[in-house]
Image (cartoon, rainbow, N blue to C red; front, side):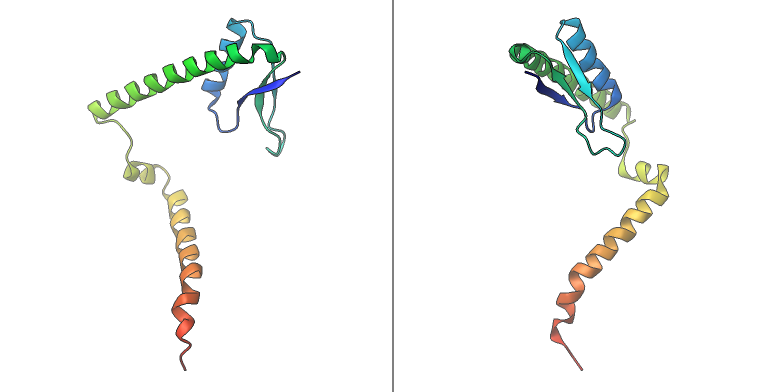
Length: 123
C-alpha cells in the first residue's frame, strides 16, 4: 500500500529535485501527486512500497540535516561578508507590496480596536 513520504507544498523546486534524486539513487519506488490547477490537492511524494518507509525516512532525515547545516553555513558566510538581506532591503526591492501590507494591517487594527474605543457611547 502506498504511503505519503514528503509533502511538496511550499518546498523550493531545488529541494524537491534533490529529494527526487535521493529516492531514485537509492532505488526507492515512488510517485508524485501534483498540487492541481488551483492548488487544492496535496502535492506530495508517495512511496509505493510501505516496507521501504523506514529506509526512506532515514534518508530524508539525513538529507534535511545536511541541508540545514549547508544553509546555516551559507547564512554565516553571507553575514560575515555583510551581504545578508535586511528588512529595509526587502522593502526597497518590493515597496508596493509592503505598502499594501501596511495598509491592510492598519485596516485590521482599526476594525479590531474601534469597537472598544467607542464603548463609552457619548453624546
